[in-house]
Image 1 (cartoon, rainbow, N blue to C red):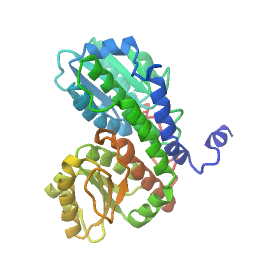
Image 2 (cartoon, rainbow, N blue to C red):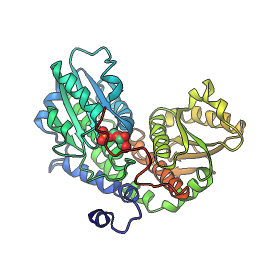
Image 3 (cartoon, rainbow, N blue to C red):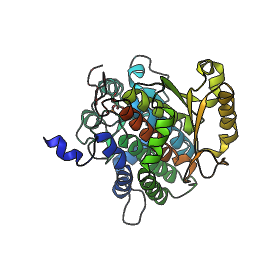
Length: 362
Ligand code: G6P
């Protein structure tokens, strides 16, 4: 059938879609830059964001996790206060809004009912909305004032991978555009750095067996696992835990390293796998302290770090990118580890139990 053709030689859509990530980043660069290599957004998008004093990102699932990374990028690069909300909560427990809020709906499919319910409500109140979606003409795209497309190509696997990295890249582009419009100093040039990110993604995806090994060592037989990190790494830990839960059915928690000792460390037993993501120089020593705490209680720790943070020999070290873009790189190992864990455990990778690609009921 048609789906077999699209999958090509790949065993699973998820594997194909993870592999497509470098190409998706390059595609995004192409779509959002002009012939001078400068970021170019539509006038409509620019005027929407120029009117806003605060951004409210509204999303579900993996898109929500991408939003958490986007919040940090928007605040640090563009200097615009940003909140991230789960759609199904926002609709019923709307926070106090600023005087000129802009709503950004993040949705791979553009069809998620919980997100649409919020969009309907905020429009009723007269607010403006920008949708970031992978699907042109989708409901959330049609009903919002403006759309920024993810240009990731169809995502079929229920576990979202390339949409996550695409959303982060597009949010970074938006942040840079706002920063430039406001005359803010830019810490580095975004588009060349995104191009480097794509190259590094290629190199990671060409060494999948390394992450299959890590998965075998840490996830293959365990009933539970923790992902720990701080700052942006903590956000990626939430996505790592979500991937592992979704497709391998291992009970997984993503946790800010410093918070473990306030409860969850009680769950650490002899051999409990703890995967630590360490890409942020600012909190390098703190998170390493947290790793020592869990190891002292018997945890089987796996450290995935990045050049640019001081590291040790017995850890997996990823090539360096600007720390604020590190989630685009650190998420790849955890996506791959989740994939290989699901395979090893005989799970249906592309169609996990109880889940749907797009949830069109509230
Ligand atoms: C479902 C999917 C997830 C996805 C979430 C939000 O739960 O299984 O992979 O992240 O919906 O979907 P959206 O299309 O709005 O990004």
